[in-house]
Image 1: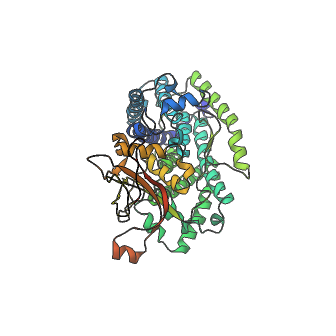
Image 2 (image 1 turned 90 degrees about the vertical axis):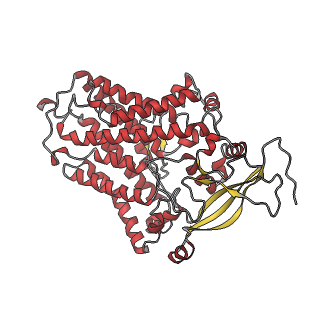
Image 3 (image 1 turned 135 degrees about the horizontal axis):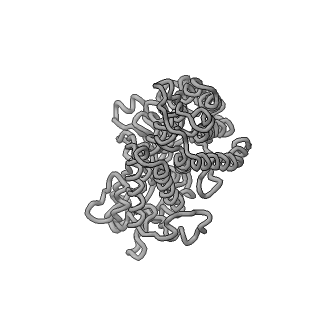
Length: 479
């Protein structure tokens, strides 16, 4: 193995093991999200159906297995197949088969999820989708117990982690002024897309501590990532600091699998020799070495545009530069909202709306609604409808194309759509009318929580959608 030390080193055994197992676990979560939510969102009768999307968008922009055939049954088969394969890899199946078979398993996993993301439209327009695909593509070339971990791929994982962290740091430094004056966390815990059970408590931390949090975030994202490329054990220490800051974010919010995948990437930089003597793993076959070198050249070539984006004063967040999502740019919360708005969707079984109409609210699983309900923890599971509702509250433009169909399905009592919600106030028959209202939400104070039991205080701002009935139903009259 000495002559191949530049290519493969058993010192990375622990980093590869932790990364592969963790990545497979997150793939499992991602495929479960797809399998359990797709019918209402992008299914044949979904709010933004896949078949219609495929007719509008050319194949070169969105390559997908579903271009060959689409049906809800086939999509479900792909999603559940991906979940089963991810579970097998998380359990170590990749090390129980020949090297080529292991690579094929990881490639199938990546191809299935790419096919889903590329037809997922606005529901899949988040940076963690591209991050999972980019990390998943690198995982194809990490090998298994038949060969020592390839050094080049392990360094490419650090390069990915660097871009995730440094990109997020730069977008903040160039973005909202509150990141520079260290005040963004005065607002962020309250206005983030989906607060966690601890977000209320984080919000009420002393303001000087919020400033320390913000400064520590800048250090973790703008300084520490450079240490990933230093010799061990410094690189391991840097990875540990990144993991700790991500765990802080896990506790304070619900950001799908973004934080967990960043932690898994950080674990890939851990030096296995600090834990145990590295195992004596076989020398890599020539064909495998050729593939790894080709991968490295490809990633370095495709890194040019993300690097230019990082250096640009007009840096973009979470952008893919190729339809395969091979090398992307990342970033989050360049702007932090000072005020939280929420859309409350309500229905009534009264055929005519009037001043005394009784409206009953639909409760969502994750997004705030009932002011007495404490926020829940869902991440790394991703509630796609809840996240889009947060964006819709920021601007009706974010709701274009899907909010109308969403309301229609509530009026129809669509079973798949109702499964995305926590509470259906009309279990026996669909409502006659549905409306949506925009509220300003804020966390209650300690005194308000003790006296009312409410985690939120809300104030009506305006109607978001007036009372609406199904097309063809009798018209509403005014009283």
